[in-house]
Length: 107
Image (cartoon, rainbow, N blue to C red):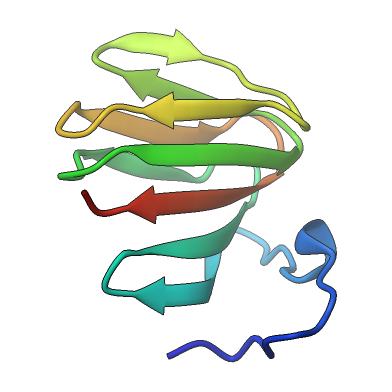
């Protein structure tokens, strides 16, 4: 269940705040078909290497992450997207404070 109200306009980068020394997530949509979640990372924070059984689309809202996919570093900027292939190991680290929206769709 989410706390976001349907049928309302949402400004994604304003809908989630930073927390000093932390990572914050806010799920916007969750169904059997997939989910959409906002994340904010304070500089230097990270998610350790993991994988997902489906493709994950990252939409960078502000700042800059380093996204490692299969050992290769990617540095998408605000306004750019990156698709992480299903079952590929990946990790995320905040080069600067950053916010992203992730969309996961189950096949």
